[in-house]
Image (cartoon, rainbow, N blue to C red; front, side, top):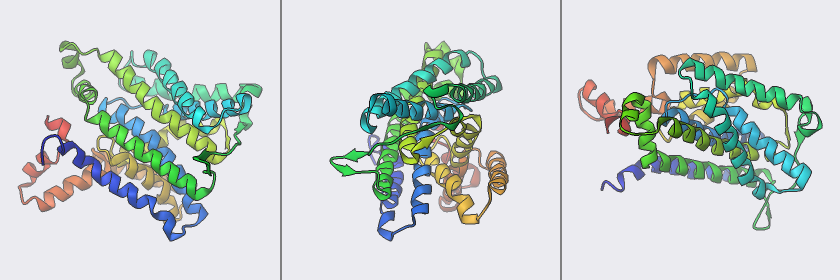
Length: 335
């Protein structure tokens, strides 16, 4: 395979999986299954933004759900006060989340490590407090309703199956956009910062500007996710976008794997459907999630997908284990 087509090979499995997922309505699934799948899809879109921030730039945010909330509330307020529909609200909400990400990122990125994680966690909780005490502007603790049809070329997309297919299309667009960022010069710059920030700065890379840029990009993904979530649920409240939902998003991207294009998709689907498959209540789900996270950190540092890829290459390459593991390392790390 030529050098120009080699990066495309990493995207093809995701496109195949998403094509198969798009065929699910042919099997007449239940409304509950479709609802869970739509919720998982909106999370996956936000996760692709978080994978750019965490997987490429090495910055873990614990306030990502707040960016999703900015997009959701922007869409709800635009619909309530200005009669703005879904398709107009979508870019406006994405821009609002990007601006909020920049506002949060500028002071937060002045610190590093666990201090940054704490600051983003605090920003997420602060947004929930502001929304709760926003009075009629934000609907206070009860939140806001969002009504109005979602149409596309005259078709009513509010139907559950059509909305599911639309979310799958948005997930596909998010995956392609994330793949394009990973394999662009900007993505290579982010990885250089992740691997050695001091060396990158010594080579003339504006580290602070690129970090804020990664935060802004993740905000765009989160804003789109928020609009899709708001129109699907029809009602939003501050508790949906506090710091604890951000922990779940971080959990998803770490379990699936932040550096591989399949990771966010795998993490979002696994965390959404695991309690349903195992018939777990919320408390049991949290215990299982915690155990999965510990197992991933200890045994699969590249996430579930990275671990599977490494195991397959070790099993079928016919090479010694050390050599196969070296070849299984992410392409950008070898470069």
